[in-house]
Image (cartoon, rainbow, N blue to C red; front, side, top):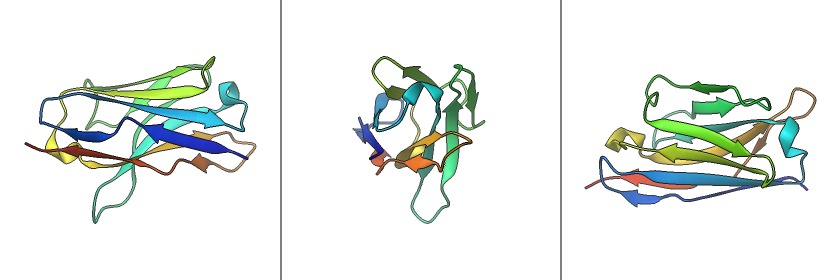
Length: 116
């Protein structure tokens, strides 16, 4: 059974930082491309960042220079370091695992709220 479990969300003031984690089980983590998506109230889910199985990264323009994705294949975990957070970063953040040979997998989401 595949599981993606996000953690690390919470309430933070503007300008603050958070680190999200996504622990995967039930998949061969090292061959999956991993990503973080977010969905704000009343908006569609949007791509935040991805990291390929080989370690190449891609970022949405809105988070470039502030967010960093990384992965630890030994721990089956992908991370999202979020710095200089803004109120518009408020959303539920979802972890995604993708491999062309299978269906994509999603975590249950973790809430990030940026507010003073």
